[in-house]
Length: 209
Image (cartoon, rainbow, N blue to C red; front, side, top):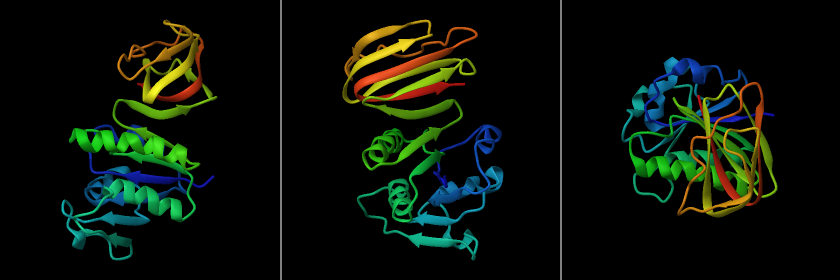
């Protein structure tokens, strides 16, 4: 399945780890100052979008398609990039350089995961510390022991019927609320795989390297 990689302007420290996740056929959208990562990621831009208030537009390669946005707009550059990719038929997304720096931008970018799922798409955010994805009602997933920790955080209300097995802290049909996020820093049992399922709601699954 073809995938869209969206690169934001947040700092990246471990380029090697992120480069390992990039596929040769990925469609890459760089958002404004995300273009500063172009050389170290080794991923040529398919499209550059933004108001270019933080990256000079004259530094964008001439052969690169670009969409220049107004400074005053409802969508951030990253959200616009997601919507533009959806228009072009992409349903799988990898987001890099979208966490860190300004907290408002980080929280807004986390919300993209929920937006994608509600629109029939899937997304994953990867940063220097790990991977973040969204689990929704009726889904189950597994986490391998290659991750040092994993956390489950309720999103958009209460996550109901959370079950965890194969982990240091198991759960059975539990509820996690936004007011009490007790599902932080769990561990996969040595030699196994943890299993997580959700009956109703949304959970952010954070897998920490």
